[in-house]
Length: 365
Ligand SMILES: [Ca+2]
Image (cartoon, rainbow, N blue to C red):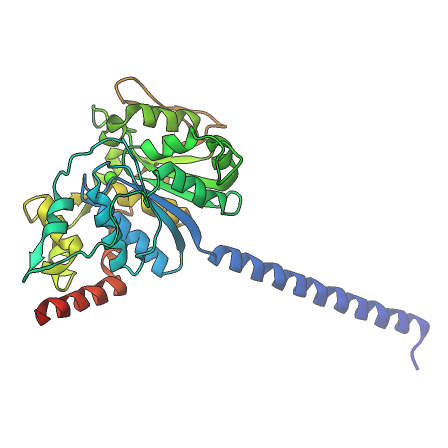
């Protein structure tokens, strides 16, 4: 038989045990929720001027690889180079990654309408009489304005969830920010971005004293870049020319890491872009890595501040505690960053399987 004090002690012990178990259960549940929210793919929109420089193709392939790894949900691709056949190229390239249905948008009456180098040549390349790209879409009424597609895709997402990655002239993003309420959302572009977008990751500008010129992406559509940097209502991280310029994608990877290189559209395009062998700066790839995996710390971030763009296209940074802008700086991990880029550019199972299928089609004829 227990004394009164022993009974009280036992009751207290039971209460303590019950509270401990309850606490453990609540902690376990909240951990499970954290894990699932961390693992949820990040919704991403990629705004690219594929057809100007070759790094856009590598950046797009990295995004498809991130999607294959379920790190992102690539909602759509908007094109900021106003050459119509870029639609054919991007459509066919997406098909190679089993994403032939991906929504595409186009900057109508935008900049850089000239064919330039690798888009027409790659689309027109024949090996044993067969093409290396098989587009099923072209620029027609089914391809919306880039900013309209962005509005449609963003409106359907959770608040503060979307990452916009822009690696060309900023025509589409500026038009989005200046857009009015429409069939997709009663919000203005500024309100919609503020509600839905978590981060804008931009390749554009120059943020150190090493070079003295205005950066190309900014200059192509200066007004658009000024609009984006002066009105974007959410955090914006910029990768300056100086960052990707020091991280060179090696020609040896293009030559050695792809089987069936003669019919691999990325390899064909890379070889058309400049005489081989050449190593190419990874400007656009840096904005993809930072946009998708900021927690990995691939780059050092500047303090918060504001970036303004002057009438000549120079990007001027002013440190401010409440500023929404930051820019990337290189760390001493450059080999790791480059290895990550190479791995994600080269390891797509979907692409190698589809290239092998295309080889079989070619050999049948
Ligand atoms: Ca680009």
